[in-house]
Length: 189
Image 1 (tube, one colour):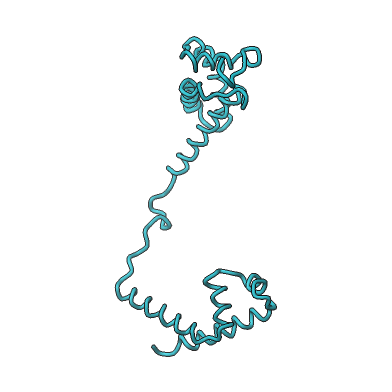
Image 2: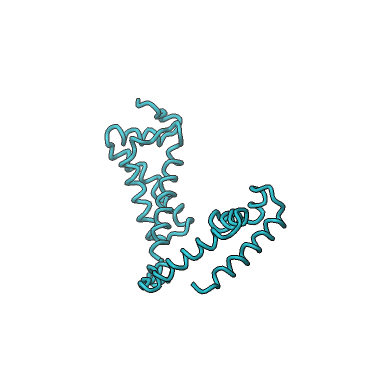
C-alpha cells in the first residue's frame, strides 16, 4: 500500500481513491462518482450556483479527483474533506472569474489618464522647480517637517512622535512653513 493512504477500514472511500491512483480503476471511480456527485452538486447549490452550473461543476470536480487521485493523502484529510475542498476552491475560482467579468470597460477609473500637452508638462516642471527652490528657502526645521508631512506622508501626531516635538509645535511650525511657501510661490516667476 502506498505511504500516506489508510486502509479501507478507516475510510472506505480512501481505498477507492487508492485504486484510482494506482491502477486507474474505472469501477472504483464510478463508485466514488455515484456517491459524491450528488453531494457535491447539493453543496454547490447551497453555495449559490444554479442547478445546471452546479451539476457541471460537480462533474469537473470529480474529473479533478480522477486526475489528482495520486495527490490524495489520508493523513491530511478524509476523502470527503478533500473532495469538498476541491469543490469549494473551484467555486471560488468561478466567483473570481464572474466578478472580473462584471467590470465596466467604460468606468473612468479604468481609462488611461488623458495625455498631457507639452505646454502643461513644461508648466508642471517649472512649478516643481519653484516648489523645490521655495523649500530650500525654508529653515531646516520647517523643511524637515514639510518633508515628513508630504513626502513621507506622516500625520502630525506621527511627526511629533518621530521628532520628539510637541504636537502643537509641529502644527505651528507647519503653518509657518506653509505661509512662507505660499508667499514664495505667489511671487511672479
